[in-house]
Image 1 (cartoon, helix red, strand yellow):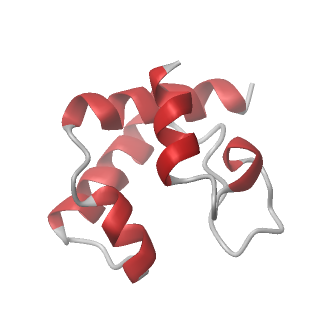
Image 2 (cartoon, rainbow, N blue to C red):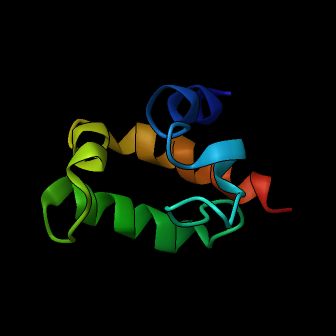
Length: 79
C-alpha cells in the first residue's frame, strides 16, 4: 500500500497505470527485477544516473524505505 501511495503521488504522471504502459514516454516499471529497480532508484537519487529534471525532483528525497516500498509495488504489478 505504501508503494502504491508513493507511486500515485510521485510517479503516476509519467509512469501511468502503475508503470505498466509501454506507450508512455517513460520506462515500464512493473515487473522489473527488484534489485535492478532499487539500484537504479538509488543511482538516480545519488546523481549517478541521468534522469529528466522532472524525475529528479521526485527521486532526490526518496528514503531507502520508500525505495523498497516502490520496488515491492512495481514487482507485484507485473505478475
